[in-house]
Image 1 (tube, rainbow, N blue to C red):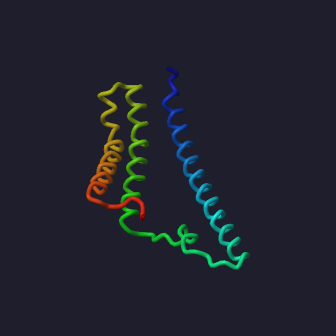
Image 2 (cartoon, helix red, strand yellow):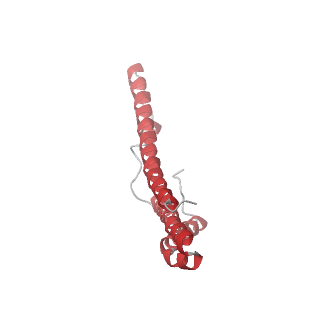
Image 3 (cartoon, rainbow, N blue to C red):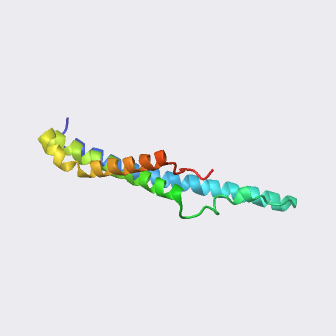
Length: 128
């Protein structure tokens, strides 16, 4: 295995993270455009626009759903981000030294456990 392979893994992780965010923004934008086209078509035909076509803009910015979503996203971010320092240290210095670098990994797992506890307690992840 080449010496700089762990650094390339980190670069690939960072580029992948940005790519996922950009794809999510593009998909949300396309969904808004699709809803707008449907609304315009109904207005042109002279029909009433149902409230279901305003769902994307009418989402509340707070609530139980957003608590769980925030915990889930933060947990995944810290867990995935914490795996790479552990891998780099384990490959270079061995597994016992890698345990010292695993703080972010354990923080992410803790966030994911909190999200699962809220799911078990009945907090909804989707509003329906």
